[in-house]
Image (cartoon, rainbow, N blue to C red; front, side, top):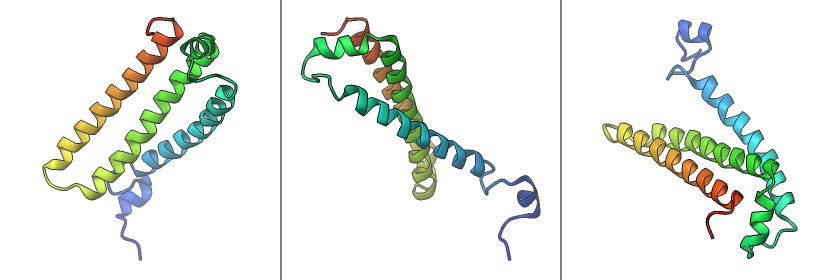
Length: 127
């Protein structure tokens, strides 16, 4: 016995209509985060993180700048997906819509701040 509607079973959609897409987005972003995290840790292993000059030199490389921005964006996206699931599961009533908007805005703001910080250090403005 299935709790799915016949139409939902045919379309392969969850109760909210976007279950499989959301699930796949979480998994793909998680795989991307694993790869980017390994790169981030390995590439920073020999850098003196207490020295702005050393971090600037490391981040001045275009490859490191682009991958760092991609890392920040992927972290924000993956976190946003996870927080969305928590809000959908545990917040009810009118607070759900407000919490979703606040969550999305916060993730976007933090991702933008991270990208700006990376670009400032990369281009040498921000000591």
